[in-house]
Image (cartoon, rainbow, N blue to C red; front, side, top):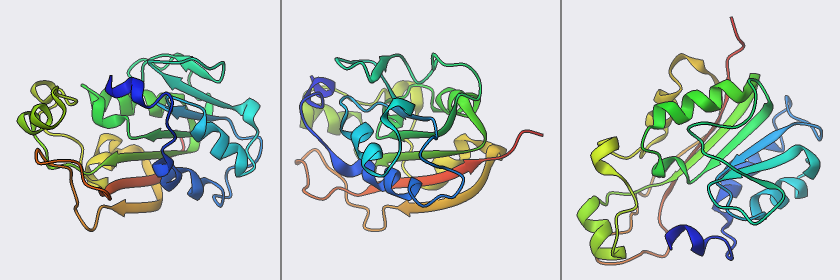
Length: 199
């Protein structure tokens, strides 16, 4: 149910990742862009609104009703090596049971010098908090240990493949939902960076 809610609602937090792409000089209107976990076309149309061609933008999600969003998993991205000039992974990495594998797949399908943008919701909640608040557990803490919760943790997933960091927002207010309830302006963590040229 948590995932299905996003099929009919637009959430603009991915703009933290999308807007920086408009000024990165290595990207242009013909850039091939993958959006991981968009649920609906909102993020794809936001990219189109920044001048990127819709025919070159594809979404990848476990749930889809759209021809623009291909069914698939970020742990096994169904595209050939070096397919994309940019990848946006907005607020989906937190659901990964193997963030290193997801990062490895993003590296694989990104062209040398390509751009990766990743965002996660800042959270201090543990499994008991999620169960109390939502009635179920979003994270699989028993598999991941601790959630990815900072830009340093995101960048560490990509190890020595990170080249230039264009945008870094590390949840300076540190506002999290809690078992007591959802908060209006939860903090978000977002980073946009380039992948090193292959050596």
